[in-house]
Image (cartoon, rainbow, N blue to C red; front, side, top):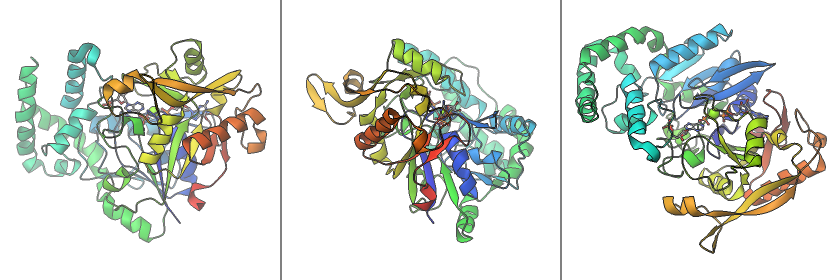
Length: 430
Ligand code: GDP
Ligand code: IMO
Ligand code: MG
């Protein structure tokens, strides 16, 4: 039985959380492998809304093991807050059902501050980050000066590590005109938060190997989307991690045969939060309609998401880059009632036709989408749970997308509610 990796195939917020929650009924372990609390995943279960940032979306189901892999950057304070918030909603969270990789790098308050300072200094050139310190924390990890979760277990050597880190950061802070941080104040903060997070630390690679050996099904939960990938995305308007399915191996310690099936999550139209190119963005009436009906406001920052038509060129590219076997098409219901739908099938760059998204930043912002117009449907698809419940035009839209993106649809999601899913091919049976 193949394990399944779920990844976003656009600019994030495709509905990964809902699909992972739905799929987690079929898995025993749900594991995050990259990103941090820049992610915002909304689950709706019988009307109850759960908002998750760092915790895997399997956490709301009793009896599932939730794992945060070494590829994730962990803000201990944000994690402690999220755990407390979910516990208030009646979700049980303890070291029995949550394990965090002891070798995961930590996000510290200075990372969030640096993120915000850089964004402010960049003015119009800003990335539009979530200001959660994601980029600066990954920089420290790659720079081999990060504080890792396991370091909290060794208070004796923690100060030395903090001093090394602060040599770097205080130089930056001086340059930015910010007050320096003393090692003692940071060590004191870390010691205070240690009892809230250290009990969850463990050798995730081993736990996952043991789970696999015992025949347990593992579900890998990606955050963000391929177009935000640090290599393959709209650089530099990207996040600071690899988000493609291959990262599931490096971000957990399970080897390249991690998942047998890669499920790409694809929204039936396109959204983006933050700055950067977006060829099919609609600044007019349709963008507004999509935003209102799709309730396109960020879970993490509350920012309004930019909206536009489905871009088949970008999605086809994302799916190939990430080795996607099938997609879950989400938010089809948001398109209900629109007389006509446009789909981008190619680009025009200075009169030249392109069948892929160019890598250069200038070209990415200059391409003009070439649209195909597809008839819409009047009837509602909201809450549909079978293919037969869909209007004929909706079926045609889905079929046309499959052709254009060169990938089969495994699931269709028709509302935020957990069970409102049309299953066409079970990723765990493929
Ligand atoms: P994620 O980051 O990929 O997990 O996506 P988010 O949770 O940030 O954003 C997706 C939003 O769409 C959430 O508010 C979901 O509750 C909602 N959603 C997910 N699937 C559907 C769907 O099929 N239809 C509608 N109308 N909303 C959906
Ligand atoms: P989920 O998992 C949408 C975007 C930010 C910004 C860029 C860099 O909910 O799909 P960062 O804080 O990561 O350095 O910001 O990436 N971004 C997301 N956009 N969904 C997300 O996660 C995102 N995580 C980061 O808006 O443009
Ligand atoms: Mg989100």
